[in-house]
Image (tube, rainbow, N blue to C red; front, side, top):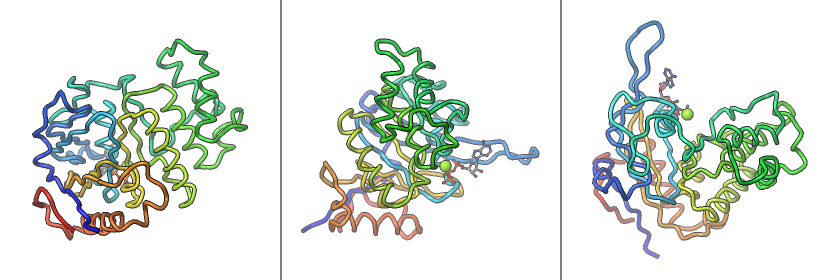
Length: 283
Ligand SMILES: Nc1ncnc2c1ncn2[C@@H]1O[C@H](COP(=O)(O)OP(=O)(O)OP(=O)(O)O)[C@@H](O)[C@H]1O
Ligand SMILES: [Mg+2]
């Protein structure tokens, strides 16, 4: 079987039309003030990215390369030092109900039960048209937490807390799901299961999803496109289109093409792939 991996240099990503992209990142630079007035730190440098509606995009890269910062800028929770983010062609100036974020550290409210944490997202957005508790309950069940509705976060495992975060994000029915290592504290098997569950949910709803992970297999398994980032300064080094058919199953991970992607991404992360890659590369 001929395997083919299409590589698109980040520089060329800017050539699509803004209207066609659901999310468009244009020359985005994110900078932070260093502690003790020691100057600024460039977390993301001149990033360009076009994400089509309904696609699943994963972001991989070493710790500190700006993955969360890129996501936060798209969420409107961090103001760019340069460039801009467009959603549906409109510049992002702050958070909006079209985008929901699942944070790296869950960000649950410890004094609220599972059900009330999910309800809270709906309350914030003044959700109408359906009973809030019934809707929250439905999403709690969807992520496999039926029976735990009245538990508080400290009574849950890390993985269960992450599921609450995912339920809260999904319940508000956003156009865009921004997920920052949502399975970070899960064991390998539960992680695979949650990945499959998330894909099933995504395939039903066809949201646009942007998903940060350290797991190379997870990044390939979920994605239509993989954004590879590098550090010093934090930047997008490659964007890889994943041609694996859907629906994907655990067996997908054993396919030849999957293994080729894995090998390639590993090489990218180790800096063994030239950054000025050709537009298309055959394996
Ligand atoms: N609020 C902040 N104030 C100052 N510096 C920050 C802030 N947030 C992030 N940084 C810095 O920006 C850089 C990128 O951080 P970011 O959290 O985006 O990386 P990451 O790729 O998500 O890392 P990880 O994989 O460890 O989560 C790091 O050097 C970090 O110290
Ligand atoms: Mg992070």
